[in-house]
Image 1 (cartoon, one colour):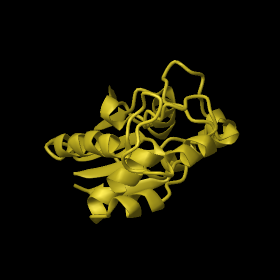
Image 2 (image 1 turned 30 degrees about the vertical axis):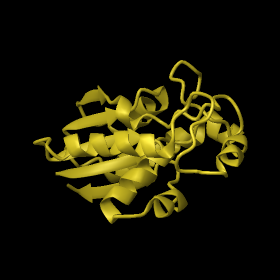
Image 3 (image 1 turned 45 degrees about the vertical axis):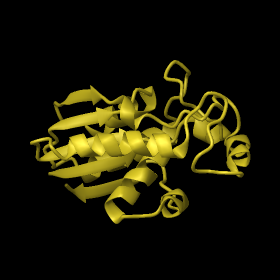
Length: 176
């Protein structure tokens, strides 16, 4: 099975450098984000996708809908690939990162979750995904989740996962 793991396109929250893990907030693709998704869609337009798996945050479905524009596929919402619950929703990403400095992998802030908890749910999703009997799967998620997924396939340490940045609409192709 080939899986196309894609980070969502640029959002208004990315431009403002704000945290967002609440699906009810108006975090949506910018015009650039829509163009980024169209580029990915062009690259895989001749690939018959079996399913699109997206997080609960609307920006992932918006991105997947643009990518899969030429496909008729089921969309499955998967909470295990949601963005990390930072405890800093609507606050600057820089504030979140500063608050994590004492222990970036284990701290839970403001009723959020730790990197380790996020990693556990992402790995749980991957363990289930590898049992799917499909040919081509599109998974649209978020930067930190994709850092973890990339680390899973490359046997990275937590620090290597953290240090590997994933751009908007970056595609990680994996034969699973």
